[in-house]
Image (cartoon, rainbow, N blue to C red):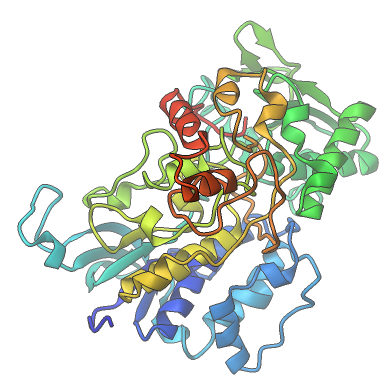
Length: 498
């Protein structure tokens, strides 16, 4: 049992951060939640108009639900599909207001650095015994406090990927920023005037782009002068549209099919193999370039290109991140977007999220680095396991308590598109199934068999069900892990979904 009197600092009061606090309280530990914004769920409110792919029953963490139930909270219709704004209003704000969590929540407190007390990154002596120093700033200035553990659930919403295909802002991108929206604008709501009757270029091939394209298509019915262009890096649209009717998240499959219909009907112009490297501001509008190819001028650009983690606040700690995905090194092979869909990625926990400095964990979307396949229930499972580890209950921490759904897409369907797909021919995958910033939940249903048998059930070192069966039978594995390592060794694209 953990008898350390120091609090566990949770950075971020989004759904995963508040879930972590609920699990800490159930374990008898003291959370201290530091949130930079002036309200909880601030990241989700950036896309408050977007309806999620999963119903309420897969959006609410079990430990959080128990806290809310103690206060007489009435859950929403479990089969209804909430928007991001509804999740904040009907779930996160009531949760933050409970007597159990409210005393431990500090708003308008931005964490700016975490270190080991009296020990910089180089110092070894008694490092494991030293508590964490968490430095934060509020309206009164800078402050420090001590913590026994740190759970970073701050997300990635503040760090959008640039439009440039090289991972850098495209030449001219900074100058064009007044006409570039990063993320998902509320095209039919507060941002309607910005896009109605305009020429709009959407860059990105994940579900965030799909949502924007769908809303723009509806806007064209109200404002016929609106013209839509869509640019993706893939050589074909087919790969990015998802599993359709085979997707176990029905609403996600329907969205992909809706975009396919828009493409077939000519409602939007599509530019494939478009690796944006320059934006030219001309009297006629913004012209996007990919090498010698230039698209027609537009008035506005939507960058639905995903996000990346900002780990600067942990830079004085010893953390181990994968060189490509920027996720924890033991998690990276499980989430490489070249290898896995959100159905073939096995649920994971404290063991895969550990760092050389013990008891610091990056969870939620930020834990996935640049990988795009994060699901909300994955974050809940992460913090359940992490909190168990902090409490000293490693038996519970190692136990997998979640099965994720298959997407209906396998990388072998597109094996001729690139060498990475060929190297990973034994693993299910999709590189553009769910953009990172669209936080969604998934039903804990049995995974489809897929091309690798679905996720493993018990073995921590198995990458899929076939691998688990092979290792149980005494073999070295099914070969997926070898393929994964080969792909991981290859240069990764700077932006996963474009």
